[in-house]
Amino acid sequence: AAATSPLLRTPLPVKPRRRCVYGVEQRDGPTVHCPLVVDMSGAYIRREGSGGLFLCGKCPAPEDDLDDLDLTVDYEFFENRLWELIANRIPVFEGLKLKHSWAGYYEYNTFDQNG
Image (cartoon, rainbow, N blue to C red; front, side):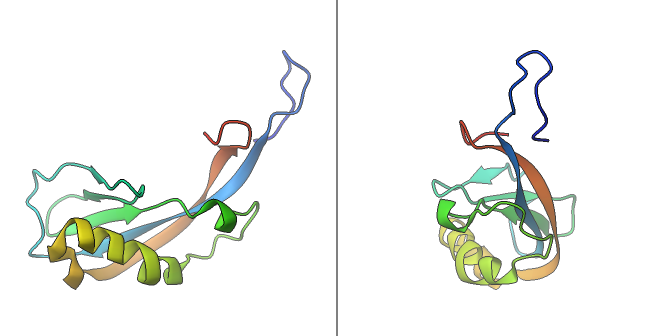
């Protein structure tokens, strides 16, 4: 991702940053018409099909957002930070169950903090 631009002949300030997505279940959660909800903290949750499944995530704090982390899912981040943010926004999610998760790299531009 951080290749040299052929037009500018300068290195692009792009680094791989790990992002984790968590699949949770809450059978008593919002209905299929639930929109994408993004908290002021940046935590998000959205419905994934039917049957009480949702996807959620959040970017880590800048001091924890390091280059080239391995693709191991950060379960501590979910347990200690994300779950509380989501449950504070939508209280029924206090009883959610983590069903699956994954990690992948996001192309992060260090110049403007964008992808």
